[in-house]
Amino acid sequence: MRFITAAALAALIAAPAMAEGWKDDYKVLKFGVLSGENEKDRIARYTPLEKYLEKKLGIEVEIFTAGNYDGVIQALAADQIEIARLGSSSYAAAYTATNGGVVPTLTDIKQDGTTGYYSIVVTRCDSGIKSLEDAKGKVHAFADPDSTSGYAVPYWNMVNKEGFKPEEHFGTVTFGGSHEADVQGVYNGTFDTASTYQNNDVNGIYQRMEAKGMIDAGQICKIWQSPEITTGPWTFRKNLPADMIEDVTVAIEEFAVEDVEGFKAYSSFDPEDKNPKVGFERVDADRYQWIVDMRAWIKAERRKSSS
Image (cartoon, rainbow, N blue to C red; front, side):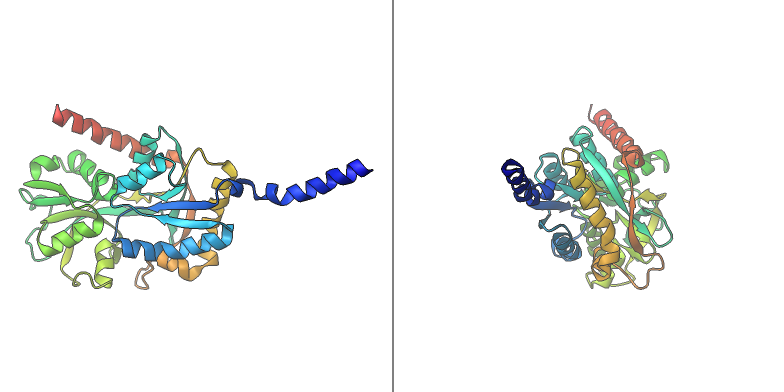
């Protein structure tokens, strides 16, 4: 009887520690966000989610930022962060860098049930440039080599749909470093055209910049738009505990319902947007395989060009 009582007591003492599961090994959850906008605005958008996850999961949560997309991708590959909010192309880059060692779980979903957005090319409205053909010989800026809408999708479409190689069509091709830098460069006259993205005609990078007073309204115009792109995923390292991936995924899923104002900040809610983001949808690796294949094609084209 004494043995049974001691064993039961030991089990009771051990139970709280065992119940924590993966939290015993992961006292801090670090998530990375891409450099699509300036760091101040990135932090402002993701801080409500950071605070929500801390309360929901009962652990410390930290936001990780880097000066470019590759910084976040490499941090994920080097096990320096556990999760990242990636674009489709940066997910593909992380998938390649880790030999498939990442797991996509969620993407944003809009009010009408769609989960996509668009790559666009913009210019100053007073530039006289009305099409990609008009931009021949001009200075064009892509956003970042690991950007879906700011590089991979427009580059692939220019070659395979529009019938020209950007390096041969434009007078100069460069990288602005981020979507905001691309738009700001066009606004300032540094670039004639630039690749960026929008969700629709009232919600996108340049529209947000107008709303924030970074640029004057009515100065930036769209001259090209891609087919719809699946929004990038929340992506975990595959070497994390499966229950950790599921618990954090569920917590993020519930964010839109349990912290409505925080989700508005995260999603850059615009009351004029008739099709705002309303939550998340589960995704898997198959959803993004075409992006992985597209990136492989772009790399092969680069090798051919340099040989």
